[in-house]
Image (tube, rainbow, N blue to C red; front, side, top):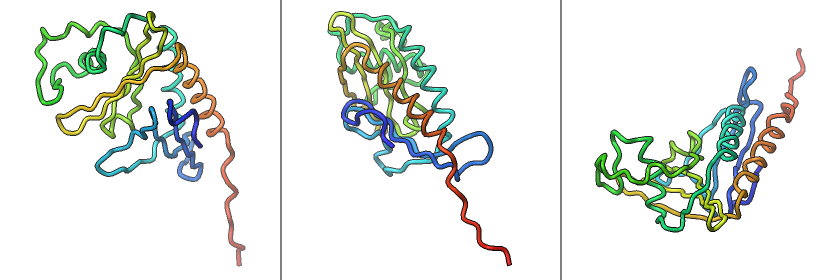
Length: 191
């Protein structure tokens, strides 16, 4: 099932009740931004994930989005915004397109953002961040793919508050997918 619009922001989830035992539901999960399915480009593989954990993760992201302060993003390039969000997370080993950024080159790390990169997307060498622009009244999503030491950065603007609305749809859709009963088991007659 696809939740959201793949040409905007969407989750493609496919819960498989039969893949799990216990209280967790496993399945397939792919994040899509601006028509790009955020898969590993080298293998285009996906892996099974515990979808019940995703629901909690996205709920926590929604809380952070609601508390995210806005700022004037119009004076920053997509690369500036990406570095401002990404650098503090990986400061000790950070390189951007093969160049190590020195500690003094951190003027942008105070721009408020929310990290929207679930583990399985991060494992595929993609990163996604949300910024709110109070001048343009836009939600700005910066998403980037790392290929070795090269980083390809993209920017997508949405109406103000749209990303929060989409993530609410994700949470509702995940709830619905997780609530589906397991398919009936086929049993062979006992002889």
